[in-house]
Length: 461
Image 1: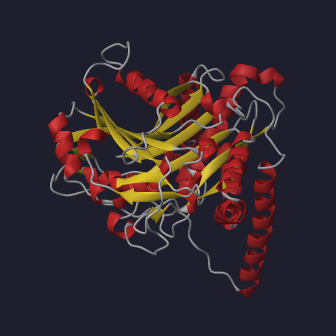
Image 2 (image 1 turned 90 degrees about the vertical axis):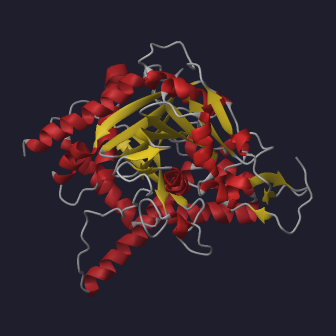
Image 3 (image 1 turned 120 degrees about the vertical axis):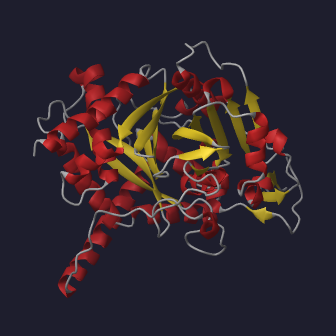
C-alpha cells in the first residue's frame, strides 16, 4: 500500500518499524482461559466499553508513504471486524482436551496468519467450544508490558466486578548495599568492564559467532517451519521456595535456572552421547527498560514524553546456559544462573543493545537493523521473556479467568518461551519448530521436573 503522507499521520517508533519488517515481523498472541464460554454480545460490550479502543493505536491503520516510511493513521473503528467467533471445536480432540486444541490453534496462528493491514492491527478470537479468548496484537503497537497492562483494563476483580485489578509493583528481593567511595569506584569499573564485554559479544553474535549445532537449535528460514505449542505449568510458591534457598536470588534467577536444568535434561534424553560437557546454549532475553518493573498503570503508560510510557521499551540480553550430564545438586543451576544474571544486570547490555539498534536504524536504515536483529536470533538457540500478571483472580464479562498465557510469532529459533504469572501460578508457553522438536510436551515436563527437583533440594537445606 502506497499512500502520500498527511500531517495528521504519526510515524512509527524505531522499534515499531523494526517489528513490521518481514525478517522481524512479530504478533503477540494472548490466551485467556475462562470458566465458561463468553457470548458474542457480552464480548462486544466489554470491548466497546474498554480503554483499549480509546487508545489511538487500536483505531489506527498502518500505512506506508511513497518513501517507504510507516505511519499510523486514525480511522473510525468497526469493532465487529476485529471479533472472530469460533463456535465449533477447532480440532479433532477429546471434549476435555481444551488445552491441546487451543495450543494447536495458537501455534498455527504464529506462523501462517498475519493481521490484515486494511484494519487496525488487532483481533480477538472467541474459541467458545474451548472456553478461551485469544487476543492478537501486532508488536508494533507495544511490548509485552504495554499489551498486558492494557489487556487488564478488559478485566474486573473477582470479588468486585466494578473494579479493575490492582497493579502492584514488583518488589525485588535484592537489598542495595551502602558502598564507600572505593566501593562505588570498583562498582563503576565493573559496570564499564561488563558492558564492554557483553556489547562486544552482542555485536559478534550479529556477525559471525553462533551456537554449536544441537537438536534444539534453529537457524535461517526456521521461522517459516510448522509449529507446535506446549505449556509448562509452575507454582509461584514452589519458585519462591527455591528462590529463598539462595541468598538474594530472584524469580527470574529461578526461571533461568529451571531452563538451564530443563534443557540439560531434555538434551540428555535425546542426544547425550554426541554433546560435549559444558556446551554453551545461548538465549535471547527480552528486558523491560522502563524504570519501574512489572505492569504499569495504563494512565501512566499513556502519558506522553515519559520514559515509562507506552510503546516498545525493550532491550536484549544474551543469556548463556551450559549442558551438563549429571549434576548431583540441582541448585547449582540456580547459583550459576544468578551469578551470570547479576553480572548482566550490573552491565548496560540491555540498554546499549537497544541503542545499537537505534543507531543502526538511523544511519543505515530499518532494513539493515532488521537483518542485524535477525542474525542475532539465527546465531542463538532460544528466546525467553517473563511478564508478571495480576496476583488476584480476575473476570471478563463476569466470567472468572482460569489462566493467562502468551506467545509470539515464530522466529528463526526452534524454541520460543514466554512466561506469564497469574494468581499464584506461572504458565510458560513453549513454541517449537516441530520438525526439530517433535515432542514439546516432553520438553515442558523437563522444565516442570527441574523446578520440582530444585524445590526438593531447597527443603533439604
